[in-house]
Image 1: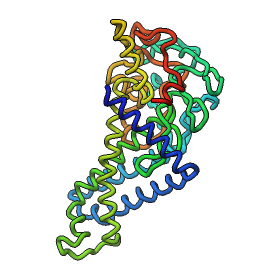
Image 2: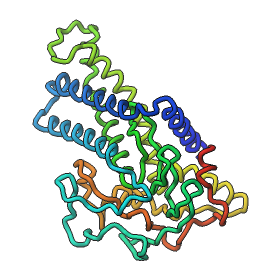
Image 3: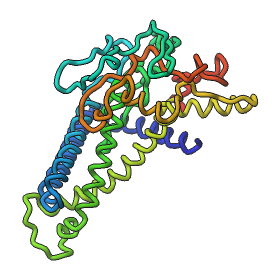
Image 4: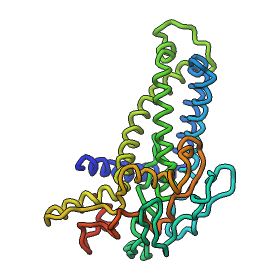
Length: 341
């Protein structure tokens, strides 16, 4: 868990420096990311796709990967993370929204006044605290983003502005799913490009003395191939870190906080228990809102929008817990303490 804290601190440091250096240039960096992803897609379908075996099978799969990559990036950049003052998020009616196929799954997102069970797990209303920065009452799991200067429901982090996975806004309740899926498809796309295109990379460098008969210039393909290697590794590490947190039912902020709570509980010969941790399978099902009572598993492979299982004012908890165990009143970390890690 020490490694987890170091990774979190590294992300926070990158976030601070990224916003200091780039400032208002965020939209331009997002535009650069779109250009680079587009160039990679063009390189793949112009140079590599014609050489793939079983094109009737592989080409549609590649198109689906590219579609997921672009759409989830569009969603994570344009969908608001879930600011405290935002109105309740309703399910959309456009073709970009997934539909549930049975009555059992047609319930609305859980609201603050409920106390019931969902998918065999008890859901309880969130407790409230007053934000010391904006002086607003906010539910648990909400944190104040000093960059946006707003409280965000289920705040994870404010994504650094960069060409790896920068989105120029917070990652929160309503766009965290798209953020994870975007990174997953980016890693998958760059991995496929690197594995299937290494011979063309040598061709582009002139190592094999093959005539270059593609529309994409050799230098462009070589640069995209090298960038794909870097992206596959860098974003792969970020993805693994976030998936690890999801498997424990915690955000990046909570992962750092919970490590401190475990230390304090251990000093009292007690044990900290994260009440949001429902077991790895349930944690992933609730995060992606799939499975029994949620949407179909197909929504992980088709780039459709879905709402989270909750509106951020009620949370599924472990059986027998209404709050975390092993932490006493007054020991909760504040946004000020968190910002200094």
